[in-house]
Length: 116
Image 1 (cartoon, one colour):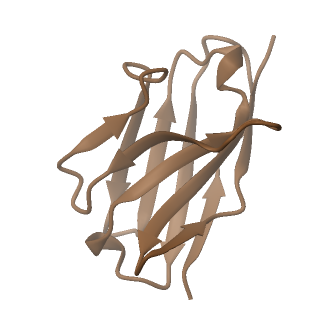
Image 2: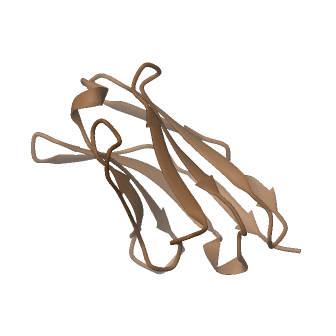
């Protein structure tokens, strides 16, 4: 079955950096676009970034453009989110996502807290 396991979250000061990873299994990873979402309690889950199956094209939410970079390593079945110049408003639980066969699959999430 599809499994997505996120890692790399933590506490970081404003202006700092983190790199999130999502290890995927149970489906042909290199055939699917992958995305990162984030959610703050009481708010809807927000799309942060997406990457096409072989990584040629990426899209970003306006709020993270120029600061975050999504990438993937199809040999390792892993998608990454490099987050630079983090701001307090980036604090959220970050989720890895794949849409496959009309189903949405999510990881367990990893908490990112940006605070001094």
